[in-house]
Length: 495
Image (cartoon, rainbow, N blue to C red; front, top):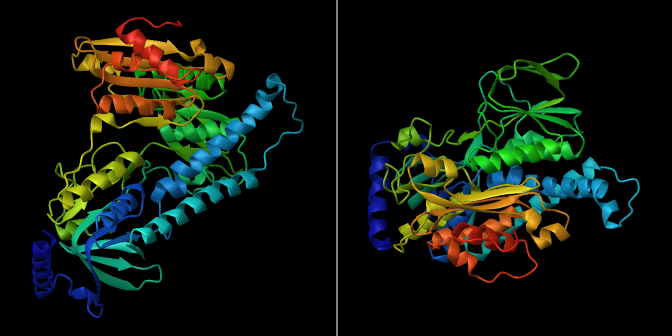
């Protein structure tokens, strides 16, 4: 296959050169001939590159950040989890240790130390990816990648120098970037995106979070634990979009008990800096008025990162939301170019991008990739955590699917009670006739870990009875999953 593709590639490059399509790079010799060039070194891109290397493909990964791991590892998933873990420990030391018979005096926050610990985690993981590249013979090109044609990529290094590389296939995995209303000017100091919220130099007395989604709730939770008065403003009538409605309402009540405030069905109409260093947020709707804060976090969503990728010039189609259009094999309108992750349709999740990266490379290598979009989990890493996979009760009702519901509270789980961490519930939705699991929803301790069993069940078409009749170790949190499954097809034992 690759021998035939190589012939087509060389002809394609010659043809492009003869038409002058890459004539503007005169003086730059093509530096290498690859089987695959991956543009973007985030979770989708670096995983795809490693998989390609494992399959024996000569592979290059182009990343402009100067560090591998993309948004997720550098300014997203990983640093936020470091802060969530640290602040949770701080909260427990202040609020719970005495109840466990542990006396601690003078507990305080060293914000600089907390940030250094966060950076240590990030640095260790980014360097680890470089090691994996070497192990799997993936060439790492630092610079901005741009598609010049069907088989050529221009790489502009940080010093401005340019090189052109050729490949049989190109994979776009450039991820996403922060989206913000045009009237909001982010400075990453007092008006911040998630990037700025991960690196504040001091704990704000008051923080306003615009957007009640995953990022806003996680970062709001971090600073709330450290003492900030956090207010979340959400345009819709609920928080945690995508989660089951019942779970979302319960989750909001829990966060309110943690002193976070919410204004739902409220539209932000203005964000302005004041001379005293504070920021004023004006809003209208269920809440109408002006709120002042030391820091405003803008977390209303993200958009595909396609800046200066050369898509239009190369004839690669995008949809009305700026996402690269692909077929079921991740192939774009330019047959030799593929795309995965946040830059195409679907949820913007690191693990979704990873699965697509592996599948796309396997398609290229004629092994047939597979991504089951009905079995992609979502997690909010607050405390308690919220995790779900499959359909919600609202979606099933809307689709006219008859279903059964089974629930089990963590307050009836022995491990959760013993750990004094029993806030939450496990909820299953299964087909009313076949008992096949259609959705699983968890709010509680370690929900992000517990959801894995439910994802596997949906992947293999399991019924709630399958989980209910599977032995779970005692005492564990996972018994709550088993009991919720028992409640779905029959009755639980401990509730």
